[in-house]
Image 1 (tube, rainbow, N blue to C red):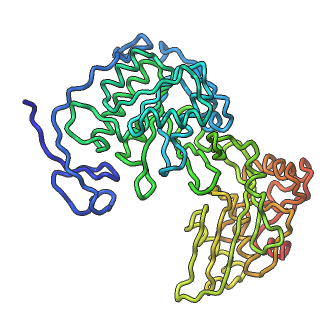
Image 2: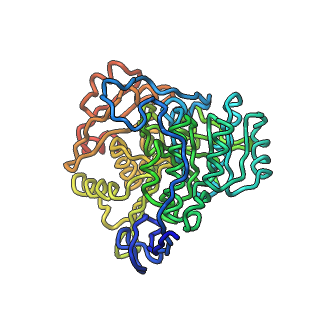
Amino acid sequence: MAKTKSIFVCQDCGNDAPRWMGQCPSCGAWNTMVEERQQAINHVARPQAAADGFGTRAVALADVQSGTETRLITGNSELDRVLGGGIVLGSAVLVSGDPGIGKSTLMTELGALLPESKVLYVTGEESPSQVKMRAERMGVHSSNFLLLAETEVESIIRCVQDERPAIMIVDSIQTIFRSDLQSAPGSVTQVRESAAALIQLAKSSGTSTFFVGHVTKSGSIAGPKVLEHMVDTVLYLEGDRHHVYRILRAVKNRFGSTNEIGVFEMVSAGLTPVENPSELFIADRNMLSPGSVVVCSMEGSRPMLAEIQALVTPTSYANPQRTSTGFDGKRLQMLLAVLEKRVGLGLSSCDVFVNVTGGLKLTEPAADLAIAAAVASSFRDIPVPNQAMICGEVGLGGEIRAVSQLDARLAETSKLGFNEAYIPARGHRDAASSSKLKTIGLKDLGQMMDQLF
């Protein structure tokens, strides 16, 4: 009989300890240590990973054939963009997001996008009839869309070996278990070992595998962090479940850029791609409202216009509030300090609220100048010109630094009907000669205040 032992594993970060602790020493979470029984693992019989003919023999780099990855083009422009141009054969993709955000909907839609390819949908949470109801609503009628209500890894591997699907969807990885482990499904050990077996199956058989993953209360992927390191691509589906727009963001991609995002609209027939997200995110803008500024942000290779709103009001607290949605809170505090020190705005006695509309998250420094302009506009109660776009990075000295891909930003701004742009002085001359917009070059925040207010 195999020897067993007990360990205690944190359900948030995957750290283990020989005894129970009230607080995880790694991530600091309370009451997340769960006892697991471990024994010597008898590895599941898996296909030999020798598709390239080398097996376990070491080879010289020159002997390995190189080439581009073979991809399945789904025809969904937003999904293909985030994946780097399509689904790479044999890749492992982890799709995560809040409950009800549309993960299963997006995965089911692959059956409609690829009717000629065999898709195996492994459902561990829903019954086949529930999946069929969703598939029919989305127009999935292909005979190549197969359902498997199974949670045991060994049975899933046998089905894949028999059916040879091009794509396998596991919904969700937290329900899958290996029978040779005593841990409960969803535990750290089960998630890690089950995923490892299915990833090796994907690499050896060429079946592209999508894992649907749950998230914890903090918003991170449930289970061990190592799960993100094991897969080729990690996708997050973001947005408010009570609104119709969703953003698919790649935070890891071995076959493409991690800066690309896809914008979708949730309708009764599923998630439909939004071809012009810039027009969408500024459609409801109140042009005469102080504190409203339009910025052009680069999401990978795509320029995207977004509205930034700021509200500055006298505080009724000892410590004024600093709240931001869609923008880094610490960077907002830095910009407020620069505005107060370099321009003289009395923000230390005011509450400041900043919001990026449409559920976007702006991370690049090019949004600094627009944030500063929105805050100053609300503080002075003077609206900025309603047909102006503002972008630039702000330094601690109040200087405005150059941004990348300025030509692409100005072209997108001009296409949507704006007539002027406030941009960094560096590169202004070249941009002015190649753009139809009226461009105003700014050297520092003081010059911005003079031009706008």
